[in-house]
Length: 265
Length: 355
Ligand SMILES: Nc1ncnc2c1ncn2[C@@H]1O[C@H](COP(=O)(O)OP(=O)(O)OP(=O)(O)O)[C@@H](O)[C@H]1O
Ligand SMILES: [Mg+2]
Image (cartoon, rainbow over all chains, first blue to last red; front, side, top):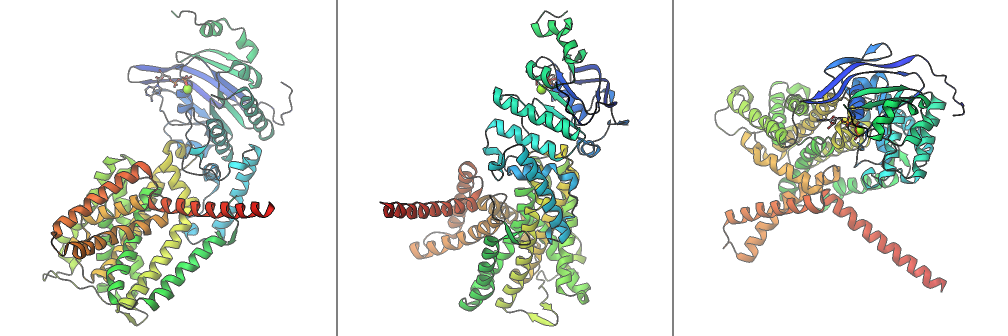
């Protein structure tokens, strides 16, 4: 990958350590540990049901792991809610689209600006200059994102009416609008054709290179993963079976076995 | 593209609509409607119930919380105003009206707490508790009714800056001013960041939370503001329509009517509150008149009121299935169709010219 990034990969910013999670009797994640470095693109791969999404849900506070801990910039993320974790600087997209269906594209992305918009409801109700100024600045910021994602023509369309691929883009836009330090992207390219995938990769790389945003990405398409990620962690049956640069992962026997469907013991 | 705002955040179209409605409400109606009947029996209750429906709209249509019990908050507002006017008359009617809304808002927060744990039909049942609790409290403690035992407590006269507003037209104007102001505030909130937070919670609460929205704060805020609107509506309803203080007027049936107004009018629109209120209020009147005119009183009044319920029920089911956005959306569709037809006609004419 040609290095055009303006931020060099740094020290660990996010640490998952010895996390275990189960639902009733089902073990989704078992004693999993890995680190995410500042400014890197880290891919999480693994077969269906390996526990990838569950892991993101733990990081972002939607699930509470029964064991282990998650650290972000030296702070424990245990026992805090998703909205507090958003405040810490972690944002995300969801595997099965979690957009605000009845709201327009612009409004969806504006919700991503929530943490930059603090006007009191009375200031909004009475249209105080401060509230109007805040609204104007944030709409402007969202227009930039809309332009960057090349979706200007659907700006005012309710997202529920959009095709799947565009909805995925809007969700990325909403996550970008938060200006979080870390973005967790759960299969942002699922269900897209080659052309759309290439476009999505371009956006993700650009954000990482120009803004230095750390990206944790779940993806099934190996070509994409090997192309854009700095490091890859491989999960299988809730356990880490590989962690390292793409080239190492490609030659890792355990990973090859898991993907070739060799019987597990 | 949306048209650009010309004043504050309002577009030309918004201002034009507002102007037309204001002229209609403040000038035209007072000039052309001479009979007291229209003010005291149609316009005043319509405006009051529309205001309550806006309250219901905020919590249900915007924040997506299936709350039932608007009439309870209306009762809280009504009896709060009665007591404030009785005990703190020096504050003046406008201040006391705002305070009675705040009393209702406090109840709104209290009875909004279950929304943090349960949703849907369970929340509906939980919020019904507010309805029963508030009415029970008013009946149980004589203080709220100033220990009146006669059963009929008349509401105080409305006096604003030393001027009495007791004639139907005068009271209509008082109600209209309050409803206009609160409607504009509601529109501002629903179009701004406040309303966006509500709608985000409504459409996908997990995503909303992941964007930094506190569900606790947002839901309780919606309950409080909703109850404020209902409280003010209830106070006006008692002081200008009922003209007396009676808890039974705020029973569960009224809560259901307000719920129907919002569903039929269209969830998530402010105009839907007004349209729904007009429909629910006028439909029985029309039905009664029809009953009298066509069947000359041969049909029993109880049958007519049953027909009314059946029609509402069927309409609600039809709207839920075919047009969940209600009559407000239906109206928009009709307007859009007329516009497009007009557009088609002009383009046809142009084509003909080109030939
Ligand atoms: N909320 C839940 N309740 C019960 N079981 C769950 C829940 N979420 C996940 N699981 C289970 O945990 C395991 C891991 O699921 P998860 O969604 O994390 O896998 P994944 O790696 O993201 O798979 P995919 O590639 O299909 O998205 C699965 O066995 C799944 O059934
Ligand atoms: Mg998944």
